[in-house]
Image (cartoon, rainbow, N blue to C red):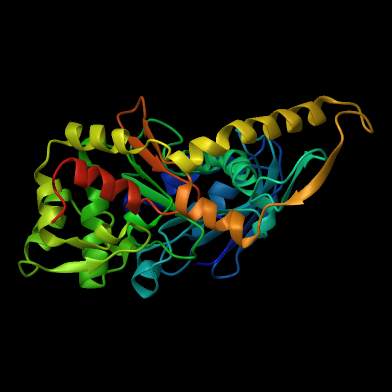
Length: 353
């Protein structure tokens, strides 16, 4: 697995794509920040006027002329400020190479977003698990915040689905670290998209806008007993069957969502690490509030060792957020995938086969 900055993806019909891009831009950009726009055919501008940027995009967007915009964003959870790049691709470009159709990256390097080191107490031994838990808490709110700013900056519902990963591509939703669905009643779309992507080798950006009925028909058309291999789950959840997906599509959405919420319980290893993680978070708070040169003694501890990464891959908790809009976000740390959450929920419902 690569370890890059997070990549956020959203699907939107091309007729509404520029409106979705404009809404996301307004939700992301710091007021008065410099906006750097470049169209694929070399038109561009640098300005602090959002209206000027949007006017140029409307004048030139089309064919294979896509919009690439860079600026600064203040992350709502951590209040950090970093660069972001927001790209809007045309359908013609997507047919040539599916990169979006809406894509957001935050930070210019991995270390801009993910903590490379944290301050820990000079007293006592190191606790790798607790430090990894702190690394989770430092980024998880920002991951969900950016995904919602891209996919649901307003109540329009233009974007039906989106996802986040630390990979440079939109893969099976159950193999991403976060997904967004504008309608919780269509949450099984994540499973159906994953099946069609893995079984039929279809690009997710090209099929993300399919109706749930069409996706259901694509799954149903597969041979009986067909299975696709899965990563990141237990040995019992090492594959996903056609029959499981069809049963999930037939399950009442409320029952599916309840099962996912019930499965999103931190495991014993994570619960054991949390008390010490809270101590470290309290130390960070004290140091942040202290005058320069004051505060508790501390030293910088690296939190990107194989042990830290492995703990996040295997134990980072899941979040299931029901949104006031009627949508839902499933999320975990970018070093983990959503498949363990899905597989546990499907087992509870008796749907795994």
